[in-house]
Length: 374
Ligand SMILES: *Cc1c(COP(=O)(O)O)cnc(C)c1O
Image (tube, rainbow, N blue to C red; front, side):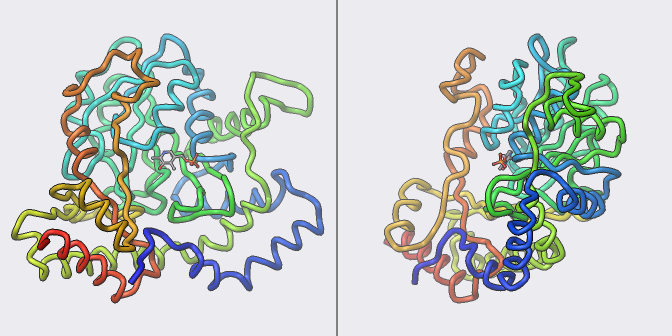
């Protein structure tokens, strides 16, 4: 049986009748840039994320860049983040000319370890960007406490974590800014690129709205150099239509994670130590499983075997950011962030998308068991 890592088509089929007429309506109107559809989408998402405001932008990467830009963070400034994340987190810091400063991860959650953050604060530090990796929030109580002590901004990279909760609070509502992505493979994906910044501060939201449109207000009067970071009506409409389904999709992902735990337990792969499962989220937290990440013995050989046998899987991320060629000037070497390096060597993402069936999940675990038996 072939099992893809992610298949977006079954979700589209359930929503096709709802989405297609709206897309055609927008085409007929020929009104594509910002406008009422974007405003409606922003209002719905602010409510969902439990924030005062939300500003639609062109991507998750741009959500991070515009948050840094709106705060005037640039050359000479330092921003503390994790070296184990998607490139865009660290790319955004570099793009505005600031210096990324890394703190290693907690190996149980893959999120930045707050115990390692404070030692990285210098007089040049302006912000912390915790990443809620794979759909689980970083320890926001500890991170916000450090930020408060040192008067730093907190920009949440919540691109993989829409609807995730830390002690009952939603991702994107705890820091100064929350950055989200509607890239199709995220839990709430649009039909192209799109993103969002959430904030509880009206002045910050107003500034983001100006920055996403070339720093312009009113038309052709420019306060600052922003950029074209706008969300378009087609993407906003797709997000608005999908949003009411998001919680049921997240629940299906959680059920899939629970099913994997039962199947792996029964397989003997946990007892043998060949596979280690993700730790269950702490009480009061909500994990939305954008990815289901296991640690595997002989990971690279397992990955190759699964691909040969039609089982989708992927390595997120094979090279931590401090060892990437483009950041060589930061002067890091192997061994600087050992937990991130170990995660990069040991982890494998398995299919977790909502429509995954019992048979498919069983096929994934059977194939892994067959690999370790061979
Ligand atoms: C996807 C992602 C981004 C970037 O989002 P895009 O919409 O693809 O630009 C940033 N950070 C993390 C952690 C992501 O997973």
